[in-house]
Image (tube, rainbow, N blue to C red):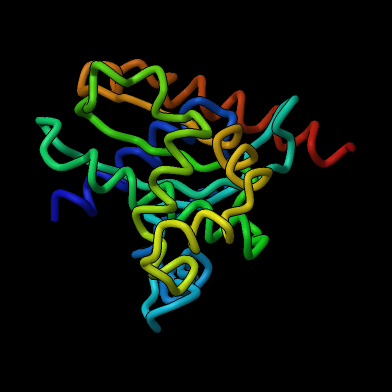
Length: 194
């Protein structure tokens, strides 16, 4: 239940920035779930991102995103989950998944504070993909997996990563409903005239 609430709250906050539109959660409908679900290349299992949608405004106009949401009060095991998320992002980018322009990790509890500034680095992506090499490349042999690793794709995934930390108070800074309605109407009018 807390995960569902977190996804709903993250979606509301993202849409409140007015830079996200058409956002949906994997629990919104069966078709939304399908759009956010991919298969690991090896092992016959699937995974799903929590949110997906479109962005607006330069430099992100019509870019698509998918997000993982962690509505946690403490860091908990987010480091382990984040590494798996990075491997999922690599798989999505490799498959040219239609929502893979941007990958967002949204949490209420920062984690790995001593290495926070490097969490979206190519080295971190590479390490995470190699940790999950049996599902990504079909091998647990580190040397063989390293040979299969696409360094350019690793850099590309790192460049697409967003680390977003929310808080209960921050969520109250969304535009007031009246203001949001006025801005949304203006954005809709402008988008219709392009």
